[in-house]
Amino acid sequence: MGELTGPGLVVLVGVTHDDTERTAAALASKIYHLRILAGERSCADTGAPLLVVSQFTLYADTAKGRRPTWQAAAPREVAEPLVTAFAAALRALGADVQTGVFGADMAVALVNDGPVTLILQA
Image 1 (cartoon, one colour):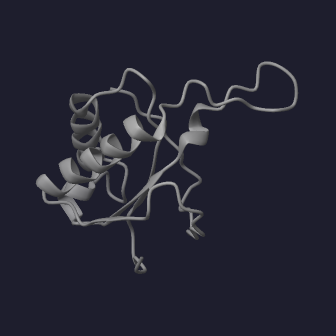
Image 2 (cartoon, rainbow, N blue to C red; image 1 turned 30 degrees about the vertical axis):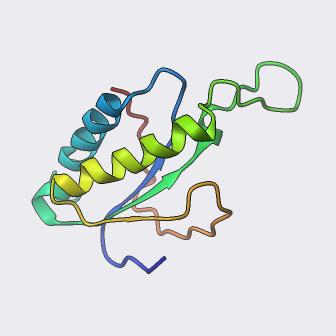
Image 3 (tube, one colour; image 1 turned 120 degrees about the vertical axis):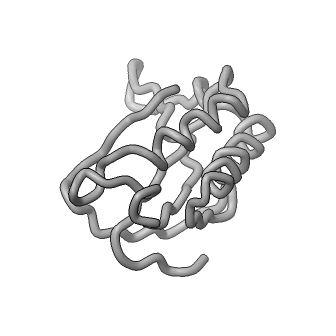
């Protein structure tokens, strides 16, 4: 995976059991047009790149004990095509998108301008 420079977004994508391609497309459009960059601009306005990283741990359940469970996260055979559909929907909008390898251990480094973390749901 290459290096992205300049302002952009790191998008951690978690997929749950009832997500669909329609959900993926709706979230892609929302993120691409979300006015959260400098000057209340969006990636659509600026051409800022997006790094899409699959992240099943977003669905961690820590309600019991000290070991999280990920039962709310969709299994690979459901999640992988939806993360791919999400990235494809961004590209269809004209976004500059990079992705990693689904399920791989990845070292992701970023400079967080904020801190700003948003949780979006369709």
